[in-house]
Length: 259
Image 1 (spheres, rainbow, N blue to C red):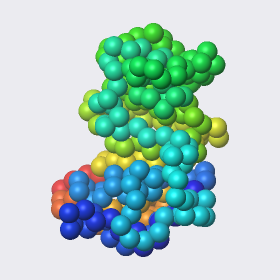
Image 2 (spheres, rainbow, N blue to C red):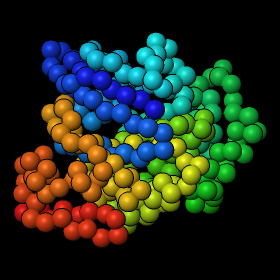
Image 3 (cartoon, one colour):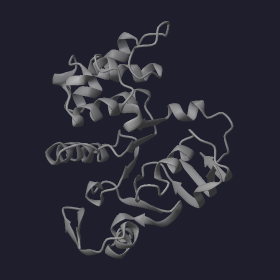
Image 4 (cartoon, rainbow, N blue to C red):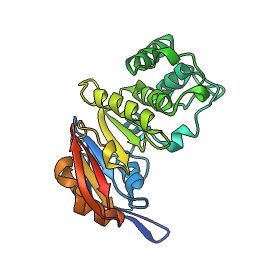
């Protein structure tokens, strides 16, 4: 799907990314783990065509692209920046359907509206997400988990080949988070779902279906490969500067016990 070769990104004389090599193939699901300031979000913005690297090469489908607009249509992004721009009074259905026309809600005057078919698809995506009961509810009254599901439905309106979830559980209470992650696991096992990139600080949010993890440290790749092999007590202790006494493993998930 994409390959980064010796990629760097410098801003204001500071290296945000340094000599990054990474590739994702179709059908793979990855987590991107690392502390604040490690370059996680910048890395994904470069990989998905929202920023150009300042050094190195980024291949998509085996080629270097100069026009990234079509590429971005095939990569859905859900993150805090997007969440803050959603019109709160519009309904879940309107927000989801707006993905068909490349908008965040239906607030731009003079733009083409979604078609009846778009609304039907948006409603089906919401129903499939367990959100059939909130189709006509204003976005402002939805729970944090419901909001994320609506934004995922919006991102899937264009049948993306890759879905990026940038810290989707931020701000969720434990119950909401676990329900959202359980739903996410069902998506990972659905062959109709796109490949997933899950950006997180929390190891326990890496569900069993996310079989590979990339670990970022100070703008570099610290480790990459099968999640169970990459995410270790020693690595986490070094990354976060706090000792990990043990890693509790249960039902394909991991919980670090911090010392």
